[in-house]
Length: 288
Image 1 (tube, helix red, strand yellow):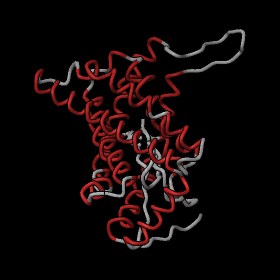
Image 2 (cartoon, helix red, strand yellow):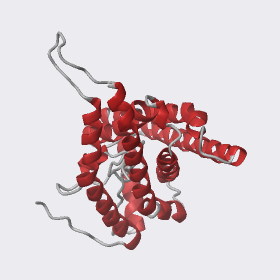
Image 3 (cartoon, rainbow, N blue to C red):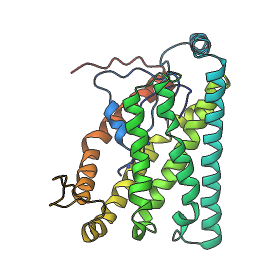
Image 4 (cartoon, rainbow, N blue to C red):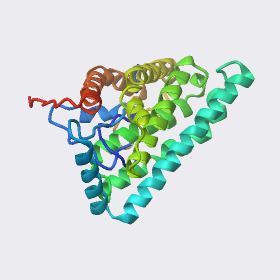
């Protein structure tokens, strides 16, 4: 589901429902910004010093590196390089599979190990927040990462009949392009050599990728509903010694419904961030 956190800068690491790793130097969120939208898988954090001069940005970046320390900066650089490489490997594997087979059927099975490794590896982003080397909310980072892991492990992995759905390809493509762009953005920012194209891609690709990712996630969950209802998987029925019940089918329905209020908040927040970064506009967000 998506990892959609709204952080900004260069640090560690999301749908028609999905469509977002917390960077080391995030832009503080106002009370109206969609911090909760991090629950969506396709989410992507963002920010920067919108409206600031390049010299000011360089001075601020240098100050952040000094405060963070050499060891932490080195680790974050390694982490983001590794994640960029991992998602590049995933992209190459997907392209190669389609060129050889000419179909999307079997694609998920062929790349699932790589996907699970690097998406689960993103749990380190929560650790980065906990130990303070990335100034992002632990809650926001945790919800964002867990939403992606939920989509990978508790939907696509667990419900095998849906693995050949076209919707799975939708969110896989959206996630892959998004993550390659995001992690390379953080890497180059940490190295103080951010190419304009990477910056441009970071704040433009999401316009298409977020809705595509969200659509893919929602359609995949929707496709899983009949199987979940029939098998009762992950559900707890009464009576039992704990006297509690849980229906995974209705949980998935609630999850799908949560995209309705959360995705627009994230998407429009990202559009405001885009104007700040690419056009230098200073935007003041009002508190409710």
